[in-house]
Image 1 (cartoon, rainbow, N blue to C red):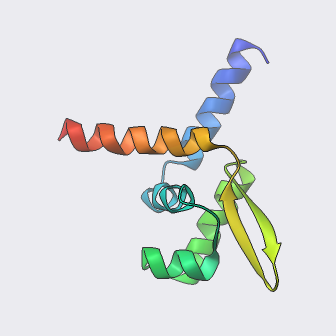
Image 2: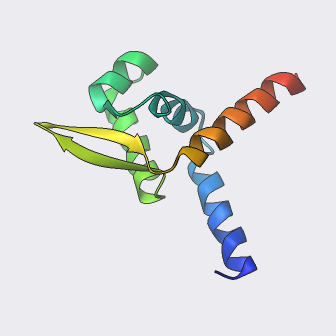
Amino acid sequence: MSTSDGYEAAGELLRALSAPLRIRIVTELAGGPRCVHELVDSLGAAQPLVSQHLRVLRGAGVVRGARRGREIAYSLTDEHIAHIVADAVTHAREAR
Protein backbone atom coordinates (compact mmCIF):
# COMPACT_ATOMS: atom_id res chain seq x y z
CA MET A 1 0.00 0.00 0.00
CA SER A 2 1.41 3.36 -1.01
CA THR A 3 1.43 6.36 1.30
CA SER A 4 -1.47 7.99 -0.54
CA ASP A 5 -3.46 4.72 -0.36
CA GLY A 6 -2.90 4.70 3.40
CA TYR A 7 -4.23 8.25 3.69
CA GLU A 8 -7.23 7.35 1.54
CA ALA A 9 -8.01 4.31 3.70
CA ALA A 10 -7.61 6.36 6.89
CA GLY A 11 -9.97 8.98 5.48
CA GLU A 12 -12.57 6.31 4.70
CA LEU A 13 -12.25 4.90 8.22
CA LEU A 14 -12.66 8.33 9.79
CA ARG A 15 -15.69 9.07 7.58
CA ALA A 16 -17.28 5.80 8.72
CA LEU A 17 -16.70 6.84 12.33
CA SER A 18 -17.94 10.40 11.84
CA ALA A 19 -21.45 9.92 13.27
CA PRO A 20 -21.90 10.02 17.06
CA LEU A 21 -24.14 6.93 17.02
CA ARG A 22 -21.51 4.96 15.11
CA ILE A 23 -18.93 5.99 17.72
CA ARG A 24 -21.28 4.74 20.42
CA ILE A 25 -21.80 1.46 18.53
CA VAL A 26 -18.03 0.92 18.28
CA THR A 27 -17.70 1.69 22.00
CA GLU A 28 -20.37 -0.92 22.79
CA LEU A 29 -18.74 -3.50 20.52
CA ALA A 30 -15.38 -2.92 22.21
CA GLY A 31 -16.90 -4.89 25.09
CA GLY A 32 -17.64 -7.87 22.85
CA PRO A 33 -20.09 -9.02 20.18
CA ARG A 34 -23.65 -7.72 20.32
CA CYS A 35 -26.83 -8.43 18.39
CA VAL A 36 -28.88 -5.55 17.02
CA HIS A 37 -31.51 -5.82 19.77
CA GLU A 38 -28.77 -5.60 22.41
CA LEU A 39 -27.38 -2.46 20.78
CA VAL A 40 -30.88 -0.97 20.52
CA ASP A 41 -31.42 -1.59 24.25
CA SER A 42 -28.06 -0.22 25.39
CA LEU A 43 -28.03 2.79 23.04
CA GLY A 44 -31.70 3.70 23.30
CA ALA A 45 -31.88 4.18 19.53
CA ALA A 46 -34.46 2.83 17.10
CA GLN A 47 -33.71 -0.53 15.51
CA PRO A 48 -33.83 0.74 11.90
CA LEU A 49 -31.36 3.50 12.78
CA VAL A 50 -28.95 1.11 14.51
CA SER A 51 -29.19 -1.30 11.55
CA GLN A 52 -28.49 1.52 9.10
CA HIS A 53 -25.37 2.60 11.01
CA LEU A 54 -24.20 -1.01 11.30
CA ARG A 55 -24.49 -1.28 7.51
CA VAL A 56 -22.20 1.74 7.12
CA LEU A 57 -19.69 0.32 9.61
CA ARG A 58 -19.81 -3.09 7.94
CA GLY A 59 -19.30 -1.54 4.50
CA ALA A 60 -16.24 0.29 5.81
CA GLY A 61 -14.81 -2.91 7.27
CA VAL A 62 -15.14 -1.68 10.85
CA VAL A 63 -17.53 -4.44 11.99
CA ARG A 64 -18.39 -7.94 10.88
CA GLY A 65 -21.42 -10.06 11.54
CA ALA A 66 -21.60 -13.71 12.54
CA ARG A 67 -24.82 -15.64 12.57
CA ARG A 68 -26.01 -16.60 16.05
CA GLY A 69 -29.15 -18.67 15.46
CA ARG A 70 -31.70 -16.30 13.94
CA GLU A 71 -29.66 -13.24 14.86
CA ILE A 72 -26.41 -11.72 13.73
CA ALA A 73 -23.82 -10.86 16.37
CA TYR A 74 -21.71 -7.87 15.35
CA SER A 75 -18.12 -7.45 16.46
CA LEU A 76 -15.20 -5.18 15.64
CA THR A 77 -12.90 -6.41 12.91
CA ASP A 78 -9.86 -5.00 14.66
CA GLU A 79 -9.26 -3.88 18.24
CA HIS A 80 -7.27 -0.89 16.96
CA ILE A 81 -10.59 0.67 15.98
CA ALA A 82 -11.75 0.54 19.61
CA HIS A 83 -8.53 2.30 20.65
CA ILE A 84 -8.95 5.01 18.00
CA VAL A 85 -12.50 5.71 19.17
CA ALA A 86 -11.61 5.60 22.87
CA ASP A 87 -8.70 7.99 22.31
CA ALA A 88 -10.89 10.37 20.29
CA VAL A 89 -13.59 10.40 22.98
CA THR A 90 -11.01 10.95 25.73
CA HIS A 91 -9.37 13.74 23.76
CA ALA A 92 -12.71 15.45 23.11
CA ARG A 93 -13.61 15.31 26.81
CA GLU A 94 -10.22 16.69 27.86
CA ALA A 95 -10.36 19.49 25.30
CA ARG A 96 -13.54 20.91 26.86
